[in-house]
Length: 274
Image 1 (cartoon, rainbow, N blue to C red):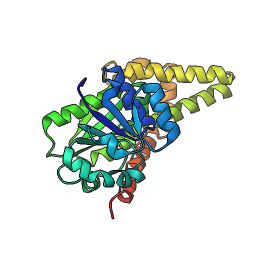
Image 2 (image 1 turned 180 degrees about the horizontal axis):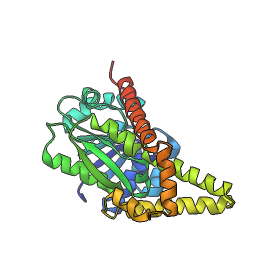
Image 3 (image 1 turned 45 degrees about the vertical axis):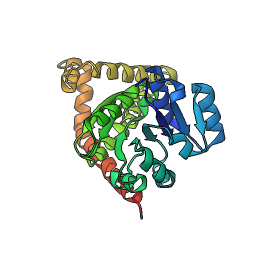
Image 4 (image 1 turned 60 degrees about the horizontal axis):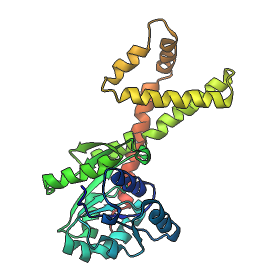
């Protein structure tokens, strides 16, 4: 990837995460440009990463072989439509990380000759520990899909998806998922405080447990097996797990993920071209 010419449209959290990850993997800053309309954000990008940040998106994408779309979903059409002529001439790979904006809409704004893909990263990408769902429609060449995956691996793991609809489930599971774990950790800390721990101690214990459990979950072992290994028969963990089960935790989680997936589909309808 050292010879990659990359443009990132949008210098927000996800754009910055990808830029930082790619720089750590050896991509030179002079081979990256950013289209960002906010002056303070442009200055911060140039100061922190040493790359070119421009107000002119046409100039930002002019020499790019890959264009990453990292603006807010409601802004994607307004950002891409003026670039259609440029993109049609250079034909870069356009990789969108804008949640909910469908391939059909992206294609209509970029033009028919531009290869478009979608990806759904999550917030841990900010610390290089993300996981991303990647969908590439059938016309995409294998080498283009490999390149997209290589770029996204700069911020964590990548899972390839067979259908675009699966991105709604990815959004609900891993995209929104960090908030679910934070909520559980928050509630655990609160319970610890109610049982007599200080706020600082309860928060430290809960956050460290979340972190450590996440590392164990990445060990390759089956999640159910990991849970069973912690749950000694007749012990404290079993008592807690039984309380979760009695409260219907499984059904609650299922309904929550279903609600998030349904909302992802609803939001996608709002971002389609007129």
